Image (cartoon, rainbow, N blue to C red; front, top):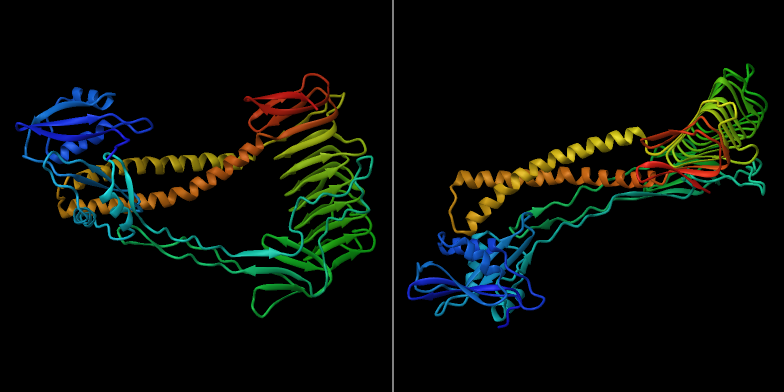
Length: 532
């Protein structure tokens, strides 16, 4: 038998016990001195020249070293069974016999497996092959458990647009075509608008000790909807009962016709609170409030009014907020201009100018067409701010901020600490389990209370690993967001004036001179200015 990896064999000569070492062949693995020490301990040898042992495992030529007086007249071939910490994999290593020693048998291997209570997933064909041909000091996989199947979470397919990132059409000059916005999801009467695909539970698995491994719990869903919708008898499909506009708000499907205001929202109309879409053909006068679960479309101007939409807000003339105006949308905001107002949205903002206003968006703010101007106030987004002109010759305080949200940074720090705490607990348990495992391998019988303690530590380790998995998953998702935030930028497509405060994530700077056709990005731990 040719042995590619480095290995050793016992030699008994005149009642002296030796180990003969053979170096690895080309491409083979060397020996770890810890493996040799473990073997000697199993054979009952504890007093030997450690320096000689360390030298022997590094030799490139065969070498024999003295260990001590022989305890026995012969050493039989030995198999070491190695069980993974999660009890899912069984590996083995063979160690050769001395002259006159017995070869390992199938019964010997079976006895070792039973000694460690390994009863499931054993590869009998692999064991048969190894009995015929094996290398020493080489690890072989001889058994594995069956992991539980994951199953599938329930999901809902929607047959209308649920995206918040739909963009309005632009004219050739770059301005928004407010007459053909095409960002509302229209549905017809009796149209299928949503289908539920139920969850599929996973199948349990089994580890090599025969213990059942339960599959993870799958998530179920249910169809949530409002008026103007009917559900199929199976409870898995939704159909629109009217021709109208469909929207998805916090997991709930809405279909509604439009509440139409033929002129202005003023004293003759009063405040509006409508479960669907609101369409105002005139203006929204100062002091009035519109709440809509769907979209709000205003043909005219919004004055110092407050508009709240579960969907999008479209204002075709703009907002003169006079310091009191507010637009709050869970979707996008598309508006001619913003002046003296607060605008908050869960999607993007597209406008031709922002003057003395505070604007925040989840994705980006695009100031295009017309003057393309941001002057005064603040603009805060996650990904990108793009404008023709930022600031003014008068040095009006203007603050532009892009990057990750502070709440997410706090959450990331919290999760890292939780992961660190769990990691410390895991690292305390691992050496305990390894110590007990080595004692069991060495044939040391543990008292019942020690065995019970070891089982409690195994249970504790599994519980900690289950706690760690979702935390690690969320940390990785946030880390990906941070990578995306690292690409955040501020584009200036004409000029930025001195006195504009630029913030990208945790970095900040104030422009001290006029710059043209440039972009501000975070690079190498600082804010850099690059040409467009």
